[in-house]
Every structure is written in structure tokens, then in C-alpha cells.
Image (cartoon, rainbow, N blue to C red; front, side, top):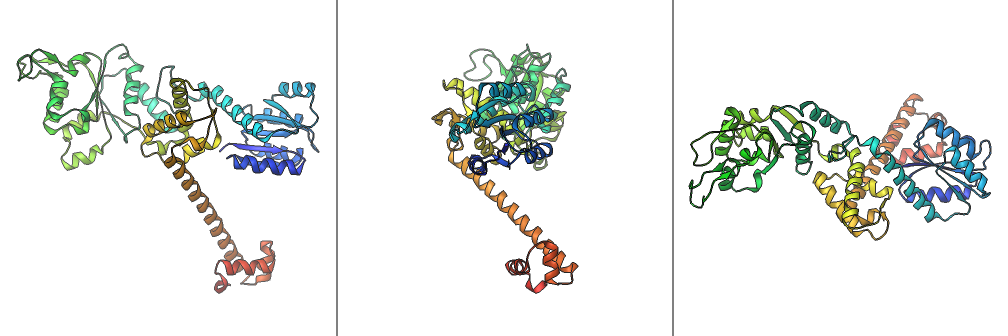
Length: 447
């Protein structure tokens, strides 16, 4: 949630702005003079500050200097009833992003704020998303930085890699990223989806067959291991392989050679093997569904991809990427992201991970009837669950406040041996208010 400070000595204007901005999904702070605004600016960081130019104690121009001295990333809007070209030029020179005349239209102000936030996000993208131009591995969370670091360390090796993670977390993206980083970049990358092939086809797909090896084998066919040559073969969903093929794969990894079906001459295997699974492979080993010796052969370098719910700070970056892609493919105008749209994305738990996020963004862009993506453009189930999560958090917060109030009252009563007058004075409330709270929280028996 973006934090906004509104400073204005007109109380009515302050109240109206606070209500409208809060309803739009912003976290709003207010100050009714320059001194109060200055204190808040020193104590906290704000994404946006809306300043009246002429206020008691300190004017808007002075506050702009204070803000820019502390943070160059804060967006500043100056507003005044005494508009002039000179003031506008001075405001921009000092670092304000824009200058509005009073009275201004609230809908235009909200649109201006959304536009400025989008511009800031665009400007900071190259600094925040430290990936190569063609990379699809997006994320600045500590968990993703660890994966990026691991890929850098192993990119030149031929060691086998096992990628694990829930469905939709991007295991294939990580495999392709590893291929693109090092010496394998110009060599083949062969993707084999083990889960989509029938048991009858998997062996011939992996190892190929000789002409006449079986009915219908009218010509020689090279398998994926042979086609991969010195590149990378990516065995996606390796946990679905039947046990007999697990045994054959183990032999290939151990001996670095294989035979085509019906063949008598061995073929050397030079490809680097990357395997991936969304299953609990250790549990499958325990239950006998996956060979333990093959697991150890594959699990040399392990990369675990976290679910999206554990790295929600990456959601805005991923969302921006998908919005750009789908806007382009749908010939949509450049879209502005409303703050509450992003908030809904970050409150949802994403059981389908990045794949579900991508689908939700595609649907939102397709259904957007303006230039601003709003929470109403999201699929209903996602918006609904995000709101439910928000309400649950709010109830928890309220419950926590209630518990803290009860604890404080009980501790104060104990301090004054149950004397209600002294307790009320200590708490800074009337004796009547204390009596009400004791009754409300069913504490009369404890006093």
C-alpha cells in the first residue's frame, strides 16, 4: 500500500482528500501546517507527498527541499490557490513532479497520482530487476536472489541439477535461464516433458530406435539424448518416469552412454542433465515410487523454487512484465496500474503460483475498458479472496488491540490493588469509561 502525506491548512480540503485517497486504497497521513508536515517527513518515508504551498510555520517550497534532502524517490505534488507560472517553474526546479491549481478535480488528482507512480515504477525497473535483457527470471526477493546466485556459480559446470518446486513456480524458466548464462548458450536445449508422454513412447523419445526395431519403425530415429549432443537435456517432471525407465536413466547417468532401441552399438552421452519435479521426491523415494540411487544421481545441485506466496515482494515486478507483454499482444494502450489492483495481487495466496498470476493478468488486460487496471478487472475469485484476506487481517489487528487493552487494564488494576478511581486516572480515562470497559470485556469479576 502506497503511503501518502497530505499537508494543507484548510481543514475541509484535508478531510476530503484523506477520505478520497483512503477509499482509493492509499495509506493516508495528514498535517494541517508546515511544522507538523516537517515532523512526519523526518519520521517516516512517504511514496507521495501532496503539499499546499502556503501554510503556517513552513511553506511548501521549504518542505520540498526537506523531502528531497531525505529521499529522491518521493513523488511531490504542490497545490495552491495562488497559481502562477513562476511558482510552477520554481516547484519543478526544486524537485516537485507536478503543480496543481485550486480548486482541482479529485478524479484528475487520483489519475495524476496513478500516472506518477507508474512513471516511478518504470524508471526504477532497470535498477530493481537486475536481470539480463532477455531474461525471464524476475525477482528481487532474498529467495530469488539466492537462486540467481546459485545459477551464476554453476553455469559453466556439467554437473547434474535437480529443480524442485510447486506446479507453476517456473522450473522451466530456471532451467532455460541456466542454459542461457554460460557456455551452453549456443548449444542445444532439449525439453522433454516426461508427464505428457505415454510409457510406450518415453523410451523411444529419450533414446531413439533403429530401423526395424519394432513394427512401424520404418527408419532410424535419434532420441533426445542424442539430439542434445553437448548441450542440455531438460527432463521436466522426472518424478513421473516409470521404474523400468528410471533404471535405464540411472545406467545412462552412470556410464555416460546409451543404446537406441534395437541397437547394438553404444552412443556416448555428453549432454548436461537438468531434471525437475513438482512432487515430494524424497517421500516418493521412501515409498518406493522413485529409485533412491537415481535420486542421488540427479540431486547433485539442488535448486528449490519457492512458491509465490513466500515471495510476494516479487509480484509487482512479475505483474508489470505480464502487463507489458499482454498489452503489446492485444494492441492495448499503455496501462496504468491502480494501487488497489496491486494490493489485491499481493493479498491473494496464488495456489497456482506464477502461472496463475500470468493467467489473471491476461484476463485483466483483456477485460480492462480504460487505461487504468483496477481490482474490478481481476477474476472474481481472486478479488474476492484478496478482500477476505484483508478483512481477516483487519479483524486480527482489531483483536490484537482488544487483547492489548485488556492486558493493560488488568495490569493497571493490579498496580492499584483494584482501586478504580486511581486506575482510571492512570489510564487517562474517566471512572465511567473504565467501568464501561470492565463490563464490555467481562472483567468485573477481576476487579
